Image (cartoon, rainbow, N blue to C red):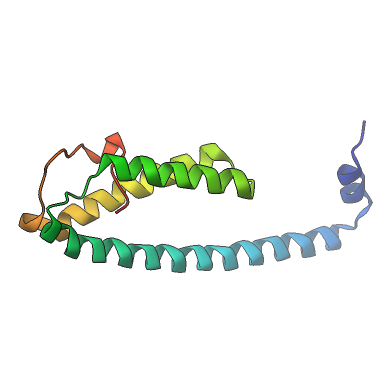
Length: 125
């Protein structure tokens, strides 16, 4: 059985489909630019945290904060209709990178209390 969407595609000319594909790609490129800009803003906050945490005796990896961030992202992903699997995989990678970056920035100033390895799901500040 043909779905309405499949029928719509079948009824369109190749040029119309090519134009739509160009539009899809253009919009994806624009979204990628927005995502990169947002990730750069987020990175600046990781840098701020790396300056403040040592003075407070807070390590880069705070498991409770990791759980909080992941829970928040899970809720937003569900609300926005984003694949939960995609959101969790992306944020785990972002968290791992963030912890490693914070640790590099904190260097000798950082503390290691209750620290886990980044692969255990460290924090995002």
